[in-house]
Length: 98
Image 1 (tube, one colour):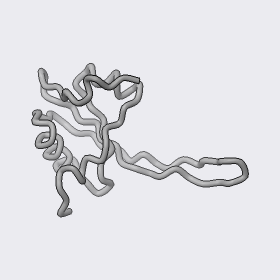
Image 2: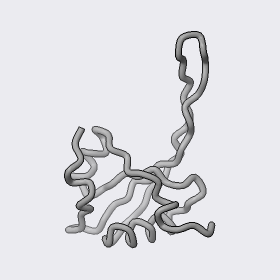
Image 3: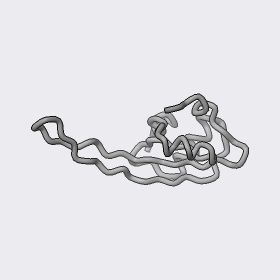
Image 4: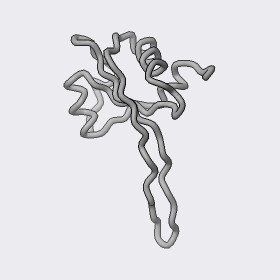
């Protein structure tokens, strides 16, 4: 995968659950579907200048959606929950609220 760090980390995921996890030093991102844990760890370390303790990844499957009589599906994507070393924080997220 010849991509930059910004291609690996697509966007942060801001939900009620991810906001609670931020208090524990865990941050949630949508990542490239083919990115592995090592690439995600390096990307977060370089972009946000923090020390990453661990990375957990999971596929988020598509769900059936309906608008009137039209049927479809939402897109599937890959989620990564990144745990930082104690004392580390990402300032980018601190102002985010729901």
